[in-house]
Structures are given as C-alpha cells and as structure tokens.
Length: 219
Ligand code: DGP
Ligand code: NA
Ligand code: NA
Image: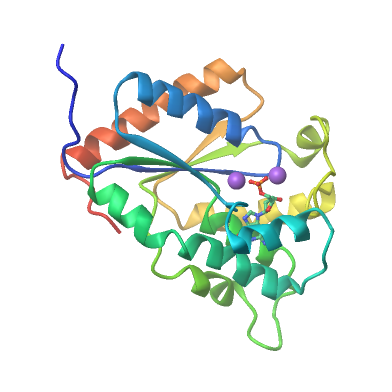
C-alpha cells in the first residue's frame, strides 16, 4: 500500500479540561493512533515549559516565585504567541496539530480570578485580547470531570491552581466559552481510557478529512 502524503491543510485538534482530566493521556493516544495511520501529525502542549517564558510559568505553578495574576496571564499568552507562526505553517503544510490546552485555558483560569464587574476593565474581553491572532482550533475536545473526581486522582494539589473551589470557578468560565464555541465537543472523562480514545479518534478523523478536503477554512 502507498503511504498517504499530506494533502490540503492539517486539522487543529485541541484538548481542554480541568486539571487531572486525562488530557495528556488522550493527546498521547491520539498521537500514536494517527502516527500509526501515517497521518502527518505533531503534538504541542501549553504551557510549553521548555521555553524561557515557560520556565517562569513552571516556577510560578510550583510556587517557587510569586507573580501578579495579570502578569501570569500575559506570560501564558506569550508562551502561545511564541509558537503562533510555527503552528500556522504546520497546518498550512498539511500537518495535523494535537494541542494540550490553549487560549481557552488562558481565558478560563484568569477570568476565574477576576471579580466582575471589574473597575479597571479587567474583564473577559481583556482576558481574550493577548491571544489575538492565534490560529483557531477546528475542534475543541473538552474532557469533563468534576473537581471532586479530579481531586481523587493522584498528586492533586501539587501545583498552584489545583484546589477544588478554584477549579469550580474555572469550570464556570469554560462553560461560558463552550456556549460561544460551535466546534466544542464534550466527553465524559470518567469513562475508560480506551472508550474515550475511541470517541476521540472518530472526532479527529472527521476533522482531518474536512480540513484535507478544504471544507473548513483556517481561522
Ligand atoms: P498543565 O501543564 O496542562 O497541567 O497546565 C498547568 C496549569 O496551568 C494548569 O493548572 C492549567 C494552568 N493553565 C494553563 N494554561 C493557562 C493559561 O493560559 N493561563 C493561566 N492562568 N493558567 C493556565
Ligand atoms: Na495540571
Ligand atoms: Na498542557
């Protein structure tokens, strides 16, 4: 059999969810599945802790340094903007991107810390602005897990945001984003890994085919 070559553009498949929802495992499963099918594919994870901004973010998350929440917000966005062009180029070259967290986490985790209405205009729109210009995902796979079920998973609380009451606020913000995102799909993160992976491959296959056939313009 001949090896399929990249045709059309790649699909941008994003995974989002609360901490410990199993995103990383599902990203890895999908990477292996698509690689076995010889789909040109690349996996990205945000925050990318290898970048210079990522090192600061890692120190913040591990509570080694203290930073203002709004400064943290800009660092996370900078960490994504730094690979913006690389992502655009990969998609255009026909490479499918599997992305572990993105601007949706960016908005949800900061907005969960802001009191509304904010006297200085630090609202949802402010949160969205630093991610302007990033390519948009073709599908957002949201792995839904209650903060209580998440907390029962291993090593919960190791990083700065892993607290049940805060994660509840983050979930509320994700729900707002879902309501304005037509390509948002929710999966039950409590299901068996294999069962989630099967649903994910079906969703991914559809997105990849649509993008190859030019049915989804890049945004
Ligand atoms: P992860 O490496 O995916 O476990 O993410 C680390 C933590 O950082 C996790 O609690 C989610 C949070 N996070 C991810 N992206 C952003 C962002 O853009 N802004 C903020 N404030 N937090 C984020
Ligand atoms: Na985490
Ligand atoms: Na990540």
